[in-house]
Length: 257
Image (cartoon, rainbow, N blue to C red; front, side, top):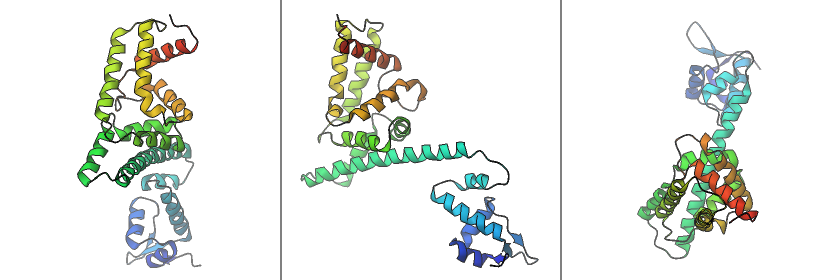
């Protein structure tokens, strides 16, 4: 193989279009030589870098990161790879949620319900009312593996037709506000145990289908609510969550009054 190739030959060898090759050059992935007539001349090293860039692009790395990864000198790949994994996990969570919603809609269609495009759009909107779905998916990806995220999404999708998700989200906000107003409160008291009963009642739609692993992952997720930032509001505060955990633990150990 010659160590000097023109752009047409490189396009044939890499499968990249001429336009893509020029774009890769603009991004700093390769820097082909130029003839006196300004025609691009690629070397064997350029071909190797283009093949590497194509492979990395299949994993979804943006070209600016690929350029940095292929730059001369040492590079800490850890942060780039960790960021890409986090992005993929968030995308997988969003896809699992979308899949579960579509499965639910298909089931309703199979049962003979009249679902048109307006109804479908309404279902998508109401499915996102309680929280920002994309932000919640990114958070869930930190605590649940793909199988558990799919199980959680399918539990949501398995809710009966006509389930009022907006009212359900409001019920969580109302309960969270009542608990917040009652604090500080003895976790062993009858009032505290009444709050636990109300909490468990609200969980029932999911408790019937969600696996123990999902509940354990969700508990870890809420344990770190104070690290989520301000993009997601589950309807109750970290203080309320910590109190419910104490009250539920008191019930489990028989320390209630």
